Image (cartoon, rainbow, N blue to C red; front, side, top):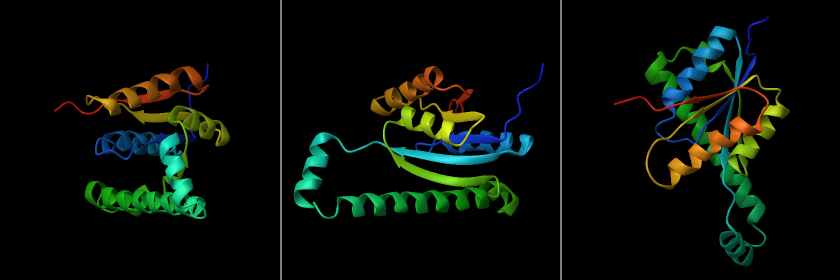
Amino acid sequence: MSLPHYKTILYATDLSDGMPPVFRHALSLAKTFEAKIIMLHVVAPLGATGRAIVETYLPDMVDQLRSEGMKKVVKNMRTRLQEFYAAELGGDPKWSELVSEILVVSGRPAEEICLHAEKHDVDLILVGINTTSGFAHGLLGSTARKLMSMTKCPVLAVPPPKE
Protein backbone atom coordinates (compact mmCIF):
# COMPACT_ATOMS: atom_id res chain seq x y z
CA MET A 1 0.00 0.00 0.00
CA SER A 2 1.35 3.42 -0.90
CA LEU A 3 0.45 6.55 0.98
CA PRO A 4 -0.92 9.54 -0.93
CA HIS A 5 1.59 12.09 -2.12
CA TYR A 6 0.42 15.49 -3.29
CA LYS A 7 2.33 17.19 -6.10
CA THR A 8 -0.33 19.67 -7.18
CA ILE A 9 -2.94 21.23 -4.90
CA LEU A 10 -5.85 23.22 -6.30
CA TYR A 11 -6.83 25.88 -3.77
CA ALA A 12 -10.30 27.16 -4.72
CA THR A 13 -11.03 30.50 -3.10
CA ASP A 14 -14.09 32.71 -2.97
CA LEU A 15 -11.85 35.63 -1.88
CA SER A 16 -13.84 36.13 1.31
CA ASP A 17 -12.28 37.25 4.58
CA GLY A 18 -12.60 33.68 5.86
CA MET A 19 -10.12 32.27 3.37
CA PRO A 20 -6.75 32.90 5.14
CA PRO A 21 -7.17 29.87 7.44
CA VAL A 22 -7.92 27.73 4.38
CA PHE A 23 -4.86 29.10 2.59
CA ARG A 24 -2.73 28.24 5.64
CA HIS A 25 -3.75 24.61 5.14
CA ALA A 26 -2.79 24.82 1.47
CA LEU A 27 0.63 26.26 2.35
CA SER A 28 1.25 23.67 5.06
CA LEU A 29 0.39 20.77 2.78
CA ALA A 30 2.39 22.21 -0.11
CA LYS A 31 5.43 22.67 2.10
CA THR A 32 5.10 19.22 3.66
CA PHE A 33 4.73 17.44 0.32
CA GLU A 34 6.91 19.83 -1.72
CA ALA A 35 3.85 20.45 -3.88
CA LYS A 36 2.77 23.41 -5.93
CA ILE A 37 -0.45 25.33 -5.36
CA ILE A 38 -2.75 26.49 -8.11
CA MET A 39 -5.11 29.20 -6.85
CA LEU A 40 -8.48 29.32 -8.55
CA HIS A 41 -11.29 31.82 -8.21
CA VAL A 42 -14.50 31.21 -10.10
CA VAL A 43 -16.63 34.22 -10.96
CA ALA A 44 -20.28 33.32 -11.37
CA PRO A 45 -21.49 34.31 -14.84
CA LEU A 46 -23.91 37.17 -15.35
CA GLY A 47 -27.52 36.17 -15.25
CA ALA A 48 -29.65 36.46 -18.35
CA THR A 49 -30.89 39.94 -17.42
CA GLY A 50 -27.44 41.32 -16.65
CA ARG A 51 -26.00 39.81 -19.82
CA ALA A 52 -28.84 41.27 -21.90
CA ILE A 53 -28.30 44.76 -20.43
CA VAL A 54 -24.55 44.67 -21.05
CA GLU A 55 -24.97 43.34 -24.59
CA THR A 56 -27.66 45.93 -25.36
CA TYR A 57 -25.86 49.00 -24.04
CA LEU A 58 -22.22 47.98 -24.50
CA PRO A 59 -22.23 45.47 -27.39
CA ASP A 60 -18.70 46.19 -28.56
CA MET A 61 -17.21 46.19 -25.08
CA VAL A 62 -18.48 42.92 -23.57
CA ASP A 63 -15.31 40.89 -24.17
CA GLN A 64 -13.05 43.79 -23.23
CA LEU A 65 -14.94 44.40 -19.96
CA ARG A 66 -14.82 40.69 -19.09
CA SER A 67 -11.09 40.49 -19.81
CA GLU A 68 -10.30 43.66 -17.84
CA GLY A 69 -12.44 42.44 -14.95
CA MET A 70 -10.60 39.11 -14.80
CA LYS A 71 -7.21 40.86 -14.92
CA LYS A 72 -8.30 43.12 -12.09
CA VAL A 73 -9.30 40.13 -9.93
CA VAL A 74 -5.93 38.43 -10.59
CA LYS A 75 -4.13 41.64 -9.62
CA ASN A 76 -6.23 41.83 -6.43
CA MET A 77 -5.37 38.20 -5.63
CA ARG A 78 -1.64 38.86 -6.09
CA THR A 79 -1.86 41.92 -3.82
CA ARG A 80 -3.73 39.99 -1.14
CA LEU A 81 -1.16 37.19 -1.34
CA GLN A 82 1.71 39.62 -0.82
CA GLU A 83 -0.11 41.17 2.15
CA PHE A 84 -0.73 37.69 3.59
CA TYR A 85 2.94 36.72 3.21
CA ALA A 86 4.07 39.97 4.84
CA ALA A 87 1.59 39.86 7.73
CA GLU A 88 1.64 36.16 8.54
CA LEU A 89 4.93 34.78 7.26
CA GLY A 90 7.35 37.65 7.69
CA GLY A 91 7.54 38.26 3.95
CA ASP A 92 9.72 35.17 3.41
CA PRO A 93 9.90 34.75 -0.40
CA LYS A 94 10.12 30.94 -0.11
CA TRP A 95 6.42 30.81 0.72
CA SER A 96 5.40 32.72 -2.40
CA GLU A 97 7.18 30.16 -4.57
CA LEU A 98 4.61 27.54 -3.54
CA VAL A 99 1.88 29.25 -5.59
CA SER A 100 2.63 28.38 -9.20
CA GLU A 101 -0.47 29.84 -10.87
CA ILE A 102 -3.36 32.17 -10.15
CA LEU A 103 -6.42 31.51 -12.27
CA VAL A 104 -9.68 33.45 -12.52
CA VAL A 105 -12.42 31.93 -14.63
CA SER A 106 -16.12 32.43 -15.17
CA GLY A 107 -18.64 29.65 -14.73
CA ARG A 108 -20.35 27.42 -12.22
CA PRO A 109 -17.94 26.95 -9.31
CA ALA A 110 -18.05 23.17 -8.81
CA GLU A 111 -17.89 22.47 -12.53
CA GLU A 112 -14.98 24.86 -13.13
CA ILE A 113 -13.06 23.54 -10.11
CA CYS A 114 -13.44 19.96 -11.41
CA LEU A 115 -12.49 21.00 -14.94
CA HIS A 116 -9.30 22.70 -13.75
CA ALA A 117 -8.48 19.86 -11.37
CA GLU A 118 -8.51 17.45 -14.32
CA LYS A 119 -6.75 19.87 -16.66
CA HIS A 120 -3.86 20.40 -14.21
CA ASP A 121 -3.73 16.78 -12.99
CA VAL A 122 -4.41 17.89 -9.42
CA ASP A 123 -3.89 15.51 -6.50
CA LEU A 124 -5.98 17.42 -3.95
CA ILE A 125 -8.65 20.12 -4.04
CA LEU A 126 -8.77 22.43 -1.04
CA VAL A 127 -11.87 24.54 -0.37
CA GLY A 128 -13.23 26.51 2.54
CA ILE A 129 -16.64 26.09 4.03
CA ASN A 130 -18.39 29.33 4.82
CA THR A 131 -20.86 28.88 7.67
CA THR A 132 -22.44 32.29 7.58
CA SER A 133 -26.15 32.43 7.05
CA GLY A 134 -27.87 33.38 3.86
CA PHE A 135 -27.16 32.89 0.19
CA ALA A 136 -23.35 32.61 0.42
CA HIS A 137 -23.62 29.73 2.90
CA GLY A 138 -25.87 27.75 0.60
CA LEU A 139 -23.71 28.43 -2.44
CA LEU A 140 -20.39 27.48 -0.87
CA GLY A 141 -21.88 24.56 0.99
CA SER A 142 -23.45 23.25 -2.18
CA THR A 143 -20.18 23.76 -4.07
CA ALA A 144 -18.24 21.65 -1.58
CA ARG A 145 -20.92 18.96 -1.68
CA LYS A 146 -20.98 18.92 -5.48
CA LEU A 147 -17.21 18.66 -5.61
CA MET A 148 -17.29 15.57 -3.40
CA SER A 149 -19.52 13.79 -5.91
CA MET A 150 -18.06 15.18 -9.14
CA THR A 151 -14.29 14.89 -8.83
CA LYS A 152 -12.01 11.90 -8.89
CA CYS A 153 -9.43 13.40 -6.54
CA PRO A 154 -9.74 14.01 -2.79
CA VAL A 155 -11.38 17.20 -1.55
CA LEU A 156 -10.33 18.80 1.72
CA ALA A 157 -13.07 21.11 3.00
CA VAL A 158 -11.79 23.42 5.74
CA PRO A 159 -14.33 24.94 8.13
CA PRO A 160 -13.81 28.44 9.49
CA PRO A 161 -11.99 28.70 12.82
CA LYS A 162 -14.17 28.65 15.91
CA GLU A 163 -14.29 32.01 17.64
